[in-house]
Image (cartoon, rainbow, N blue to C red; front, side, top):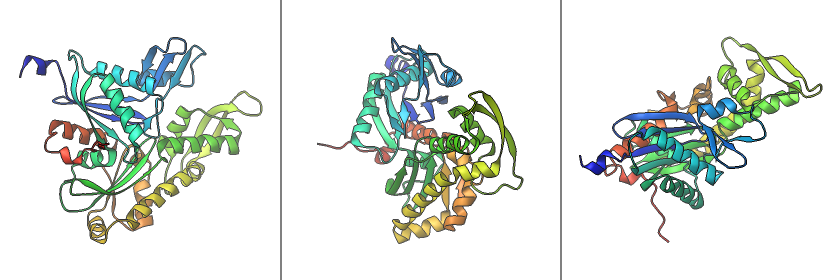
Length: 341
């Protein structure tokens, strides 16, 4: 190990809409924080990020702005995203001067402009060499699927901003469906539901907590009722209301139907030989959305395919990107190639 090696680390990043995860070669996953930044409106200086910024969300005063620089899986605010990536890398890099090689997972439907934005951000944050990998491909590698085999595997990766559906074989994506309906859209649906049906305004954090606690895609064995606090739209005062998991399921239904439809479309475009493989091997769900109660069952009912939730679905993408950075030469075929103009 040379002197230079000691001061540089190869890292893999899952730059998600909801969470950013970082894997450092030789150390494993060293960071898992919400992709949220709090900054001073006047100086644009970052005050807090990750969990600390999330605690401020919805509670900030006019001098502070709390924002999510990622929208729908891609960079929405370039300057803030770059600051966030730089700060996160700094947090995990204790002692290392620069990151030589970085693998970043991006949605499969990402445009050339969006790819350039991710590359530039990582380079400005100190990376010497930046490689991109499609999220479903990274997720497949992360959960141990042999992506090089001449067999078809189907992955549904449901994140915060996008749902990525891909059929993978021979180190490539045979067909992909990327829709911008995922965890965030479900949170929004819950917020709208309370506004319309209960005349209450609730924040994004509350909506997410409700989704995690009682959200489901199929009827539960025992339906649950919970108390929800928000602001009364009529009187403008704080108010508590009671809702059941049945109502929340109805609120989430539209987003779930769109995800199921996208899965169907992907299956319709799959070559017959690969369809037979998927029937044998089943479909794997990864990403935070995989944790929604009964989602696997709902997709199973609608497609008649075996559906499995991956182990530790939240870290599947970063684990896959980590395996790629650990063995870059071996996995070079799975990376997104640069377009030559």
